[in-house]
Image (cartoon, rainbow, N blue to C red; front, side, top):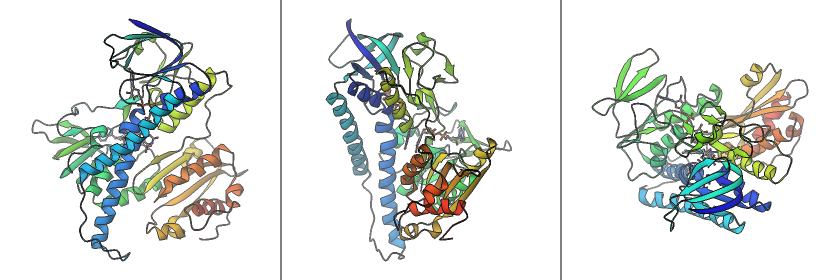
Length: 466
Ligand code: FAD
Ligand code: NAD
């Protein structure tokens, strides 16, 4: 068996692993990255990027079809058609461009990329198999081992993937527009992809175990999303659990009162969460401390074993690409001798539904549960000029701040294009802004950003446009 030595060995080339590799190499650390599928990981290949591309394409098609029957904007479209194979090719092109870019960056910085499957031998030794043009495994010895193997789709017992039951990766490359689709789970993936299929023309039903969609957010935030889904024609079955398939291939459902029913569909998309990728690659040999199904880490992403680090989805919630990247960058810098730890003021999250939902920091209810005395204010998009010009006024921007010194603790928004407000939200929280800082910043007119300023003004009792 061939053997190699490296200072840093990274297992997994998703956003966590590839960012760690680039940063480590920039800092002069000899770095080897092992990736078993495609660089870019879930995010670039079968997650964030392809889903947002399909959301855009489906929305463009939906808009064109909407204009066919609606003269409000004075636009007439004679016949809107979609060539799904071309749409998927375009989406694949976006993915290829980004994954190619990551490959080029790794090369430029001198990262050694091994396209094969890593298997842990011990905390300093990893075997890599399945390498192209190499029959045998390669043994790598390292000083630091960074685990970044991400997560995988959670299976529902009684509903294994296969045939008409698909997961998110398959749903992102449709060969045809199904007549009907049942989406199991009204969380991030279920709603983002359920909306895609509805806008492509599929009859979509979302079955959600909890009492509302996106149950991790507060109701005021999710109401405009539920309303918009219903307007689109998506059927929502709430407080209902999917139990599996019956022998005729129908979905078995159970509502909160225990009543059972069945549902038929052309296709079923299972989107009930993701689990850290901890099995099948020898991780158990390290006997690391675990936090439920995730690898337990401290504020520097150290595991319970010296010089073994873990980042990203492997370490549990929030399973977000930008968290994985920030952790990867930090670990590389710590290994290079920098004084760093992971203590972000917030990790903002966006659900790319229609309308989009953004959350950053504390909500009024989460602040109160921490016994914080807060003020909060909402500015509705009905009073925002930009939202009116976009013909989409459902939603609001909300700010949460300490009552005594007006330190901003959180932002939430729901509405068209509000994902782009996430940067302003995260910056104000990270920089310790007070309501006055935002309220007295001149915001460009007409933009959605004015709703951010107006929310801060309202919280100070100085609202101008409402
Ligand atoms: P991953 O991206 O999962 O990468 C892990 C890599 O490790 C994989 O490439 C895998 O092949 C490799 N690997 C695993 N085991 C081995 C082994 N033994 N040997 C070699 N290689 C191995 N997050 C957002 O922030 N925004 C979004 O809009 C968003 N949308 C999403 C949409 C969908 C449909 C999905 C499924 C996820 C989405 N996410 C989104 C979540 C995001 O994709 C993840 O949080 C992110 O990819 C985690 O990065 P990671 O580096 O931890 O792991
Ligand atoms: P999720 O946790 O967001 O939603 C899963 C939903 O399924 C929950 O609402 C849950 O109540 C429901 N559920 C569970 N079992 C059920 C059953 N038997 N019947 C009916 N409903 C059931 O999970 P997800 O949508 O699969 O996404 C996984 C992770 O991927 C997310 O936590 C997120 O971190 C990441 N992600 C992020 C984005 C983004 O940032 N825009 C997009 C997609 C995915």
